[in-house]
Amino acid sequence: MKPCCQNCHFLAKDYVAANGQMLSFSWDEEERKNFKIKKHYSAKCHKGVWDTGVDPTLKGKLQEVLLEGRKNDCFFIEYQPSMLFSAADERFRILNDHRQLKRSHLFTQIGLVIAAFGLFANIVIEILKSLGIM
Image 1: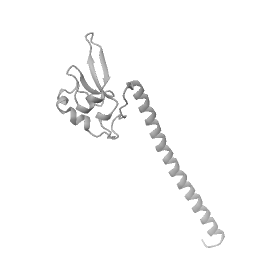
Image 2: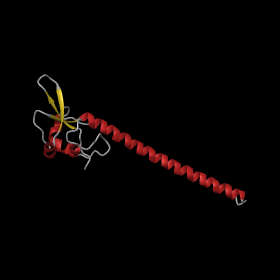
Image 3: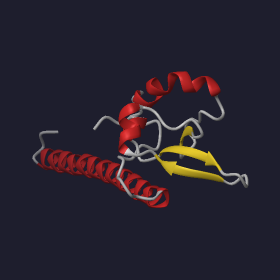
Image 4: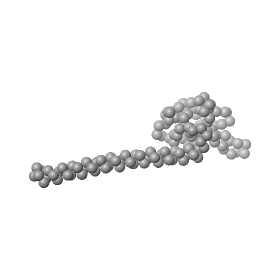
């Protein structure tokens, strides 16, 4: 699945209720497929990467924004029907922590290989010294 806003769980639509309360909802699958929401909603990224309410010129470019590739420069998490934004936030945090742990583990392995190579080279040098070759 392409990491773009159309496929992201944080694709949201805002509705301002009569009492002034702002309500955020996730786009349903039909809205994601057609790139359209009802007129009384405004489209946005729930994590604040972009918002049509802030930039009204974005409404004409909505499909372009939703399909833009966002590999590592936002909070992309694959859309899961019926998942709440708070659960998606937690899932993103866990996935991000796991990604950082894997990277740290890789650097640790590289460091251990370098250290082992250094120890092996030291042993070879000591053997060569003891044999009088060096």
